[in-house]
Every structure is written in C-alpha cells, then in structure tokens.
Image (tube, rainbow, N blue to C red; front, side, top):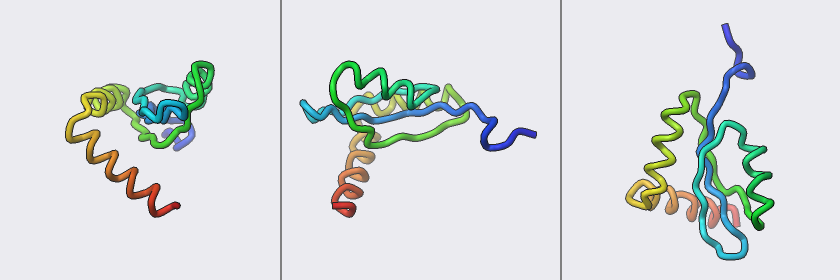
Length: 87
C-alpha cells in the first residue's frame, strides 16, 4: 500500500509574469524544478496550482485552461476574489 508521500503527482500551474502581468499556464511532474526553470526566463510568481495523480488528467486540464474559454474565466474570477480577500 502506498502512502501519500509515495504517490507521483502531476501539477497544472499558473505563473504570473511580473513584468508583463500575463499568465503562463503549464503542467509538470516537478513543480519546484519547473518554477526554477521559468525564473531563468524572467520574474514569475506562482499564483495557482492543482495536483493530479493521473498525468493524462493534468494534461487535459492544462489544455482546457490554455483555451482561455469559460474554464479559464472561472478560475481567473476565483483567483481575483482570493487576492482581494487576502489583500
């Protein structure tokens, strides 16, 4: 039986470019490593991530968000609300 720490996770993430204020959406198996790689191309903040056990589910979610349709709009509204509550 595997424990929580033995499970390979796959992440869908949203970074905010601090210079252009544009979001970047991606997916990876190693969130820390990927974030560090992005930092070499500019300044980014990690503003959101989701964790999945199934890599195909993570890939599908990334594609939904990258289409900038209703899925992205709803997530952005949720993030905007969270930032207002935290501020």
